[in-house]
Length: 112
Length: 112
Image 1 (tube, each protein chain N blue to C red):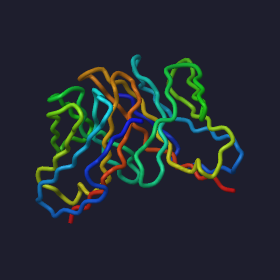
Image 2: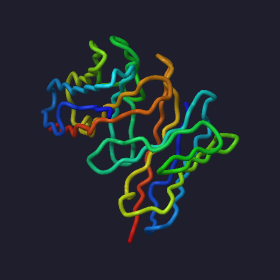
Image 3: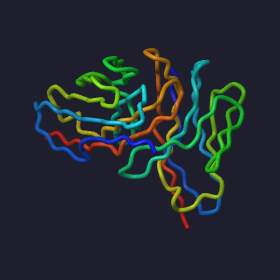
C-alpha cells in the first residue's frame, strides 16, 4: 500500500514564526501536492511538484513556499506564519498524468 | 480552468442508492473526473475515476454524459459507514501544466 506520512498531526505556532511541514511518500511517485482544507471551502491547491527541484504554484500560493530536494520528500514552508494560515494541511502524491492521488492524514495547524 | 459545483449536503437512509452530481461546465479536453471520499480526521481517499460514459468498480459507479459538463457518483445500497464528505476533482497533471480543481465537497449523512 502507498503510504504518505506527514511530520505532525497537530501543530501550534505563534504569529511570525517560520513553520515547516514535512511530507514523505514511499512509492516513488513523480508528483507531490500541498493542499489546505477549510470549512466550506473544500481543498485548495497551494503548490505542487512534478519532479525533484521542480515546483509550480497552485491556486493559493501566497504566504507559502515549498522545497523538494529528494523525490520522496516535499516540504511546505510558512516563512512568517499568520493567523489566517490556521488550517488543515494535506499532502498528496501521485505517479503521474491522471493517476490517483494518495493523501496523508493531514496536519492541523493553529497559529496564535 | 474548470470550476466544480456540488451540493453542500445530502441525506439518505441505509440501503438506498445515492447519487451525487458535480457540475464542471468548463472541463477541458484532457481533464479527467475523479471522486474522493473523506472521513473526519483523515485525508481523502480515491473512489473512482472516469473520462466519459460509465465506469463501475466494486464500490461505486460514475456516470459522465457525452458533453462531460457534469458527472454523477452513484453509491449503491449505502450503509452508515458511507457517511462522509465526497469531493469531485476535475483536472489533469501533465508535467508543469497540471491543473486540479476540487469541488467544495458534499457531506453525505446516512441514517438508520
